[in-house]
Length: 81
Image: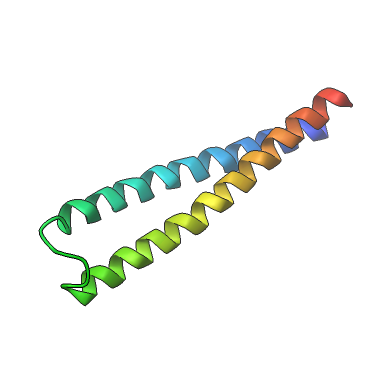
């Protein structure tokens, strides 16, 4: 029973991570639309903002992948035991 609760909490965490991943995707899409008329390096502020968004999105994607793997491992462990 306890391992089942652990799997459910890992799923909730993974689901929350996926929701934030979708929000970051929308933020990046908005940035691309706003930066469409600028060339790379033309406006340093736009370049810095874009680099920061990409850095945050990359870190969050790696964290989401880790949480997804933890959830899968918890489900497999529950089935084996």
